[in-house]
Amino acid sequence: MLEKTDTKKLHAQIVRAFKNLGLTVTQEDLSEAIAREARDTADEILYEGNAYLNENGITDQGILMGSGVVEPNDGGGYDVVWKAEHASWINYGTDAHSVSTEGVHNIEAWVRRKLKPSPRAGESEEAAVKRATNSIVWSIRKQGMDPKPYADVAVDTVVARKGVLRR
Image (cartoon, rainbow, N blue to C red):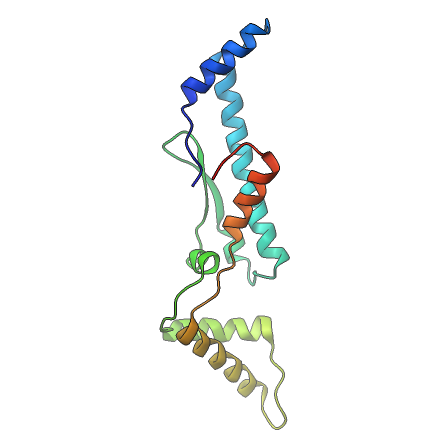
């Protein structure tokens, strides 16, 4: 979570600094500039998160990437949110857990689209898909899913590039 700064104090300090230089800057000018920068930063975080997903092959049908939005929050800033049901599972990973029948069907469909496993000698394509699906389901049940921290990487990338925000 990014730290919240007392913007009124910051505005006053910036206005004084500009005044000392003989320049005039209004609170409104600063507020507009800060709001634009906050929105631009949120847009950059969304872009970097989606780029990470794409560059690391963590995309299938584009549901996760397409679910990312920038929304204004109550604090006057912006939240970057990926709203797909599986967004947090991908970003943070999961502990070992059972997999529902629907989950097994979704994994099987993913195996067909993404993995396209080659059948072993004497094995049908359908059997190869079932084998790969069962292997993934077993792994989730025993070990969970490793995190692929696209959101965290996006924030860290933008923070490092801008050099102004702190985690």
